[in-house]
Amino acid sequence: MRAVVYVRPRGGVLDPQGQAVVSALKHLDFPEVLDARQGKIIELVLEDGDATKAKERVTQMCEQLLANTVIEDYQVKIEA
Amino acid sequence: MRAVVYVRPRGGVLDPQGQAVVSALKHLDFPEVLDARQGKIIELVLEDGDATKAKERVTQMCEQLLANTVIEDYQVKIEA
Image (cartoon, rainbow over all chains, first blue to last red; front, side):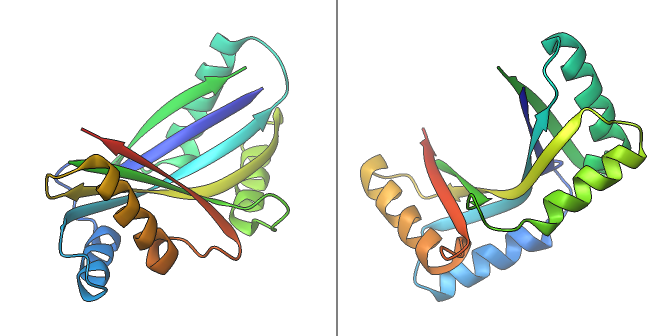
């Protein structure tokens, strides 16, 4: 079973990596870029089992390790 | 207009961040995690315009800055 976790900076939280991307793209002549936010994707391969239970477990992984919930939001997607 | 870029380590390329995630999750008592790969998401806000043209431009941004195409794959999604 596979799970994909998307971790993004929360709205309102400063995102210096995103700002660096905007600035670099402007210098590379992409002035149409108005804003950028950078987050991470974590793709997990899990032992096969119940999808609902897996989603619960991956949510616990996010809370404990994968996301910093003070400044980041996460989203869990379970794939067959 | 918004674009989302997914950048992932290519298959076969060592992913030390992913390996660190697997190891940390095992220590946190999540033994069901067999493998993990870590990549990044970049969400761009673009000036409104033609979606096909925007996809071309964002692909150029990936080639020039956002992805290291020697070791990473990318995927571009344009949202209305």
